[in-house]
Length: 349
Image (cartoon, rainbow, N blue to C red; front, top):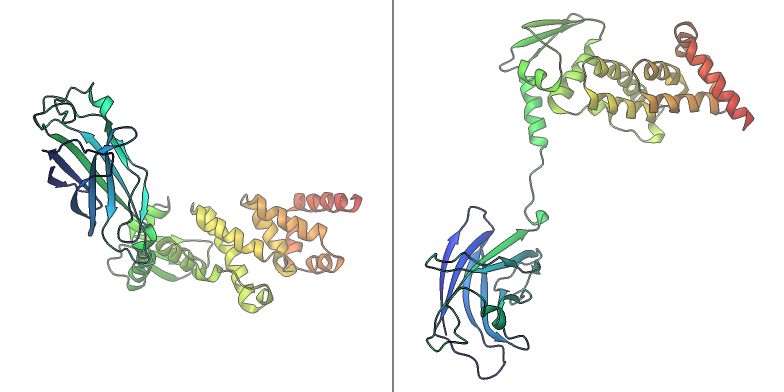
């Protein structure tokens, strides 16, 4: 029995197609697992394709994929597919058959047999390749494709933080800047294309930003370039009352307003999340409630109402003494009504 291998490597790095030409073989005298084999290299590993000319009890032609390498701690997943072809091109190839995907790690690991065709099916094929039925030792050509699926964790993908870092460095360096934002007398050089890609804000060569503090705009601009605001990182509960946490809460309040103003939805949600974490700080909850109402932050608003109307008497007294609550009384009387309704409902429960 002779087996000739012709290979065509496709563009996909872990796939390779091979033409197996099997000729000059005869029917085995027994139904033993007699086979011929050919070695191929796919994705840097050695594999073996085995052809079984007669397998009982179904009298079928089979292929099997065998791993000849060592994958170490990383497993490889691969599949074998095949179809019978006519080298002359007279007849169309048969329908492709594919084995189940199999994990390979150690030498001699193998797939389940893949049936090319049974002897009884071969009778109806248009191909004149019937060595089991003819005495002329006619050949059989099978197109085989070995596909190796790499474990994503086996080839680590570098973090995308480099992009954030590089854009942050671009902002800090001011190189190539073509727009300058002026905020409270402070200038912020930037790049029109970056700003335009992240916000619907239209910018000319020089833009004056009103009703915003420079540190708030600076934090927003860094977010536009890097997608992060380090000051909004969660703090531990034990640190919630520290000066740092209070500063972060104040920044989050102002940034939420700015994010809503400039259509930065992700930044707005980040601020909402940070403020929800600080809702149990009586000194800022009333101001946060007003902001949540003005900028459509329903979940944040619900948490503020729950804390004020459903908390302890001590919490309520502390809130009543804040400037934020006095602002509610003057500028947001409807919110006071909601608080009274919520407190009444609590009392009835």
